[in-house]
Image (cartoon, rainbow, N blue to C red; front, side):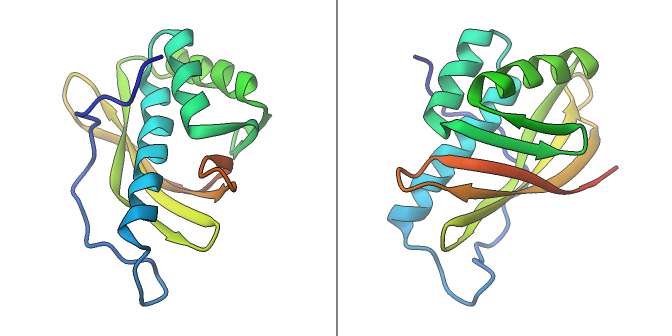
Length: 147
């Protein structure tokens, strides 16, 4: 099973702020960072087996992704959706923007889609996610996207 590469690309790091005036304990936040890194790495994985393995690490079996193109229910549906997006947007990669911020059972993380040849930013946005008892994501909702 592939693991998240140690060199997962992230955008410029921003100071950590959980939005409620405190910090998520390092132990908890470290686990969230690993889960979000695996989730983002799945969007860049070329092989369906690698995408599937990364999503197994990051999301539950009944995971739901909700975005402007629809709602995709179940890990396998998301594996297919990612493949479709890779075909629609070749020569791109998803890059995290800053740390994951958490409040209770929710996490928010920013992302960018960049051209792999030039590094130019094509799109950016933020996702909100629900975190299950096992620390994996149960639902991700694209909250906003900007060009």
